[in-house]
Amino acid sequence: MKVAPLPDDGAEGVNQIWRDAKLRGVGMKRAKTLITAAEHSVGSKEAPETARIELRHLLGDMDVYTSRLEELLRSIEGKLREIKGIGLATVSGFIAEVGDIGRFDNPKQLQKLAGYAIVANDSGKHNGESRISYRGRKRLRYVLYEAAISLIGKNAEFREIHEYYRTRKKNPLKKMQSVVAVACKIIRVFYTILTKGVDYDANKLMGDIRRPQIQTA
Image (cartoon, rainbow, N blue to C red; front, side, top):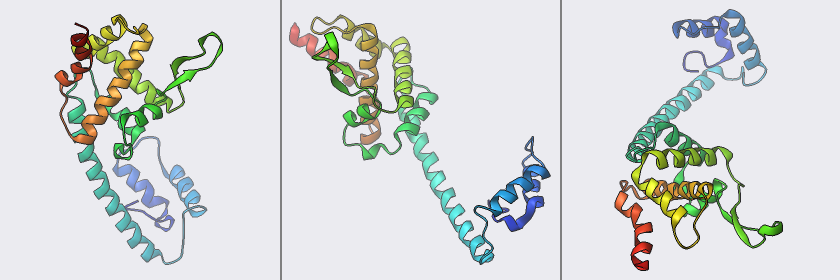
């Protein structure tokens, strides 16, 4: 777009860009196809010089926003990857699905987005019981589920939380239910870190399960 923004720049210009970038599987035939498609879609022959200037400004703005986004992502990645068991794939997948986390007022909205909202089960013999809705972004739900499995296996705090959910005296959870509960815990941890700018604190995380144990004692 920077070198050959308009169809008038010709297939030769497009092909030269590809050759300079050392791309494979491209050539004049594909360049001509691209130019033909552009002429019948975005191509405009009115005020070409004005169009070039406008495109140059837009591309410059995009570079600035891209740079800011990359800086933000590096900051976010650094904070979330302080949690043992959280990898780049989880961070990238979460951010890609959630977008601007500031548009959410609380973690429950994120939980609903992922399809992990708790709803009443009104089907057959399970009438009156609770279940998760599964009405949300399937990809986000998958990212959080995989993150939960990884944390249970690699992170001592989340593993202890998983065991607590499964063995507590009041309302113990089955294994799969506990994994989902851990995924919801991840949502709350991510939300707090990203909205408040705080670092991961294992002691605060464990406070949720230790306080009930102390009260019981």
